[in-house]
Image (cartoon, rainbow, N blue to C red):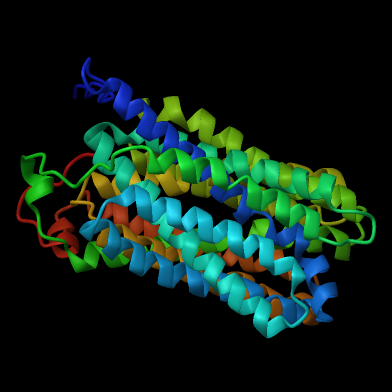
Length: 411
C-alpha cells in the first residue's frame, strides 16, 4: 500500500501572503485565548479570598465558565455560517478583555460567576471561529496548520501562570494579573479586524457534498466531552492538588501548572511534523495511552514532587495533539461547518463544566488524590470511545456508524 503524499499548504503566488496574514491572526488570537484559559486555576485562591468562599464553592466558577463556553459555541457556530467571521472573533476578544478587567474587582460569588459566564461565552465563540475559519482557509491541508493553531493556545496557556506568578503580590491579590492578561487581548482583536474573512466555499468531492451525519457527530462530541474535561480539570486543579498534598509552596505549584501547559505546548509543536507522517487515528491512540501512563505516574508517586512533575509533563505532552488530531479526523470524514464545529465545542464545554465541578465535590471529602483517580476513569472512557470511533469505522460496521454506502476515507 502506497503512502499518500503529504498535503501542500494552500500558499499560491497570488493568495499566499493573504493566507499567511489570516493564519497569523488566528495564531495570535489563540495565544490570547490560552492566556485567559489557563488563568483561573492559579488565581482561584485569590478569587476565593475576594468573595469569602471555600474552594468547594469557588469551583462553581468552572461550571459558570463552561456553561458560557457551551452557549458561546452554539451561538458562534451559527454566526460564522451567517456573517463574516473576523468581526465575531474580534468582538469575542474585546469581551474577554472587559470581563478579565472586571472579575478581580467583584466581592460576591454570584456576580463573579455571571462575569465568568460571559467570559466563557466569548472564549467559546473565539475557539469555534479560529478552528472553523482555519479549516475553511486551508481545507485538505489543515492538519499540520491545525496543530500549529493549538500550539499557539498552549503557548499562551504556558505563559499565563508565569504572568500570574510575576504580577500577583504576596497577599494573593489578582487585580494586576487579570488586568495584564486583559490588555494582551487587544493586539489580536485589532489584527483580525483589518483582514478579510474566509468563507465556506464548496471544494468538490465526496466529503463536501455529504449531509451531516448525526451518529458520527455524536461520537466525536462525546470524545471531546471526555478529553476536554480532562484537560480543563488537570490545568485547573493541579495547583490545588500540589498545595493540598504539601508537595510544594504555592509559588512552585504555579510553576507546576505552567509545566503542564508548557508540556502541552511542546507536544503540539512536535505534533506538526507528526501530522504529516501519521494518520490522526494513530496519533490519537498513542496520545491516550501516553496520557493514561502520565496519570498513573502521578497516582503512584503522589508523595513525590519529582514524580508529580514527571507525570504532569507526561500527561501534558500526551494531551497536546488530541484536540487538533480529533478535528483533523472529523474534517476527513464530514463537511465542517460552523454549526458542526459548534457542536464539537458544546461537547468540549460540557466536559470542561462537568469534570472540574465533579472533582471539586470530591476534593475535600475524598482527598486531593481524587483528582487523579477521576482523570484516569475519564481518559479510560475517552479511549473506549476512540476505539469505537476509529476501529468500527474501519470495518463493515462503518455503514452503521455513518450511514455511508461507500468506503470510508483513510485517516
